[in-house]
Image (cartoon, rainbow, N blue to C red):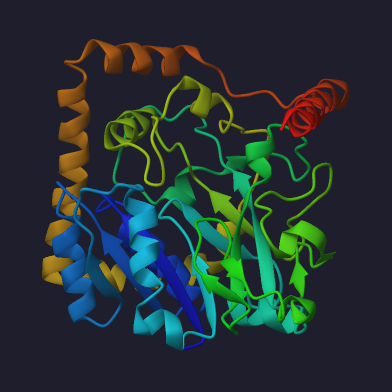
Length: 349
């Protein structure tokens, strides 16, 4: 198998078919999916997709001492599919790989940089665009405005996921990058960023964010639809975070709600994605489960509006405009403050 995506899911039934169709169109042959504690029929949908040969479904029920995503990755490290894959990407259902070269497939990306053994796929944050209601509409065709190609702050917007060659250089999967490097093999590692520039230093060992102040999307970007509609965000908060404690709050929203420029990169695979999605929805069982998952999400939002903290957050979302892009001076000030704080911490340790 050339390309494998590993992912963890909870209550993603309304979104999973579009995500699978997009990445199959991009050249991903198989998906290793871990599900946990689903209420919306996601697990039944994944079982059906497994029966159709689209993916391998593994249940990952709680409790999760390290968080459900980390528990899933620990299990995936030992899975035969991971051992047999040539290239691996750990990705979430709100992340869409968009190759900007050739025929827009992962094969074209490798052809553009045949020397690369790892691609740092920097997030491109897609904002809410003022969409309030959750509806059964494709994410990639609903949210078409994003952060500019050069965004110096916040630093989280420069985080990346890693498509890496599974050649033994790294011994474990990680949320953002492969872990447990074999130091003897690192000399042969060839990392590149999303514009194809070579990366070195701590990119090879532990770094999880790209360089600031430059365009990291010349060859490939990772479209990150972290927010969706306002109703969807409320349900997402109710679900909780997959890889650590804490919750989705207004600060999370503000740091990701960029709508500064139009971006239609996902449409390069639009015809193929729509054909594959129609094929999936034509399956009677998948079609029924998809409709049920959409209805569950709508009903869950209505139920959450009975809780004052959720009502308050929804009101705050309605009041909050799209996030403005900081001026260069303001961004430099934040970067300086962050750098000085790190230096102080290093001295105190």
